Length: 147
Image (tube, rainbow, N blue to C red; front, top):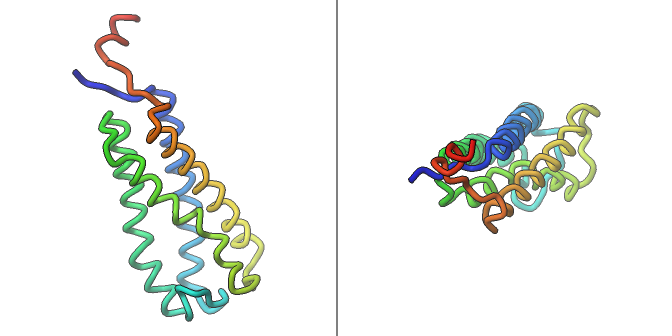
């Protein structure tokens, strides 16, 4: 028996993933190219460390987010909350830029810190709902019979 998530929840997750991909791509591209403009923080003490971190973690975590979406859409809930939570960290941790002081960056890229944070929070909430089974998959056969 195939179990699929509610179609509206798939649409919401698709929108969250798309929003996060756009926001984090803009933000992390700027971080990579203009790494010298960001103050050092504990895990990234210089611009080269920022660039290495981005080169490793951006594609890895984005891939996990997309993989989590594909699994969710297919009704395979195992690992979905973990994958979405891992991807959310790209955005959720963006305010970490302020731990080293206020970055000297254009307003647009300062705004992407906020959009990344909001998108990350949205993904964390969605992952929590999946993890607590608040977004229950539908029994496809029963749903089709009900229509």
